[in-house]
Length: 214
Image (cartoon, rainbow, N blue to C red; front, side, top):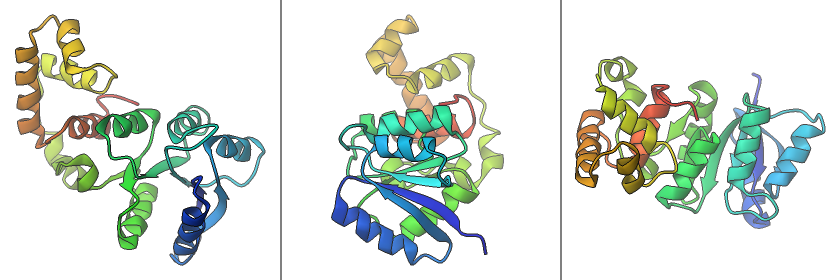
């Protein structure tokens, strides 16, 4: 069986070495390297080393953080999938990582079985997001034929695309020449239609349905 090659990127040595041992025990995976920051990833890839299929990426790191490194990989080696593994649970950080090109986002307190499943899903399906991160149950993940039946109005689509940007809801309202209350109504309508509970859920739907390409 051909194993799936992985690189671990984390500046906490004890954690990264423990993670290396854990993943090495998963029969489907092979750890190519354990690196300590995003610049190490850029150097590794640029020096014609054997490329991984997945990079398990921390976010808060010195020299070059995980968001910057993920963006670099998306721009230069888009075939490499990035799975974020971080202590950061702030919505803004998660959105930035998704915009940079991460195919999944995990918190470091997850069970090893979830990590193993997430790695397999990222390799096989192309993405993986836990309910704890998205705070939503998107039917489109498990039942894509249902999601395609959801019809969005033109202005709802415009609002959804803007939700994937750096704009605040107030800025979105100004951009769309709408009142904050009307934008709030759009948001609540999309929450109901897409069975999402947060802005992250809306972004994930837009990514999944290729409404936006991040």
